[in-house]
Length: 226
Image (cartoon, rainbow, N blue to C red; front, side):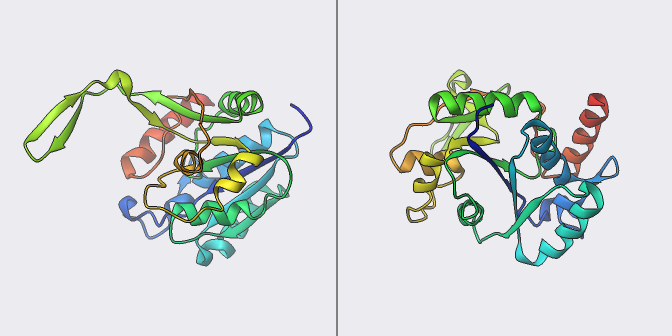
């Protein structure tokens, strides 16, 4: 990899209400290790010297520091308080990015992030400016409207994953624009700023953990990968 600065903004701002647990989902253990540790370790193992920025609710930062020290030892991670929206949380994380280079923005509750996907996102970003991982839909899809519903050709649809990856010269100015409700992820922010984004093949096992069932699936996949 080149000498560009590399940053990973890992967003773990959820409260985990759908998980039904007293502990925020990013701290729930999978195979004896908190969920959020997996993605952080993946970035650290793949890219030497990467700057890891963990974005959390302000009231979770002290707990996170204890967890990181216990499970990741001396691995350097910068913790940042998130905001009311994902846009604001990512924006807060990006305030710690101050050099030209590459930024990965990743959901902290996607523990099956692979080194292969990180490397492919990085290389495409160097070549094209961005890399947004996507996977094809496998289920049939219907659009609801006032008259009922109608089918949609799934061949034209993709499920968006993370890490969404950008050159700093693209993502930093995009996050200076005012917030809009249409900003559902980093790609929509960059597109709204007038910059085209570039897709890349994601990974089917790069799942986002939001429910107890997801935890069971993630645990099974992690066991299989050992």
